[in-house]
Length: 236
Image 1 (cartoon, rainbow, N blue to C red):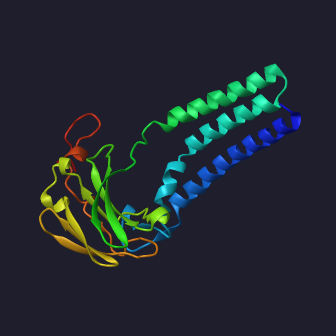
Image 2 (image 1 turned 90 degrees about the horizontal axis):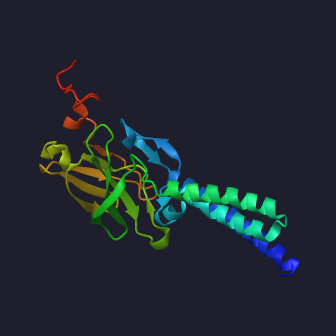
Image 3 (image 1 turned 90 degrees about the vertical axis):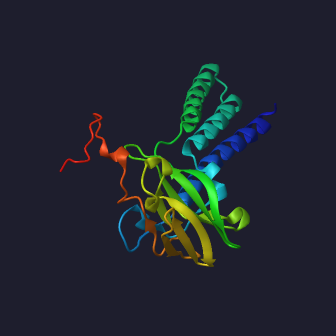
């Protein structure tokens, strides 16, 4: 291979590696959004100023970006580094970093919600449910809003509502029943016992005006046991 072609290929590989890292950073920043305080208490009141774009999420895992960049850097080293020992040393380091990052990226993130189903739709929005695993408590159900804008579709980072998961053993008043869009910026949410709330949201930011929290005060048998397995329900 001619030296000038080798040089340009090396520059191209390093450029793609830098772009992979940049895309990962941008995707993460997009998913985090800005935070603004709203009325109420608890996590449901941390509202993003803008929602994350749904189709950027596969690119947002930082370890995947690192693994891709490491692989491209190893290929660039093959082209650019003439000294065999230095080349092998650099490729070994990038291979170890890339493999470790790839393996770690496959490990499920503890405490992260995972999507269950779409529970309500309108021409412009859809409401999706997520199951949030509990570490020392029962699982809960989070309801989040998504826009329907094709590749530009976004999802709210804050939840419009939180209900207990059915396996928690909580009564029907704490469990999610159904949801329906009653207006372009309003949803009717019902618990299993029929209790209904009207939840309004901002159509631009997708954040809720009056989120419903049926988790914080819900009876939870799983949370009544301490680390030693003793029932602490009746303790002061």
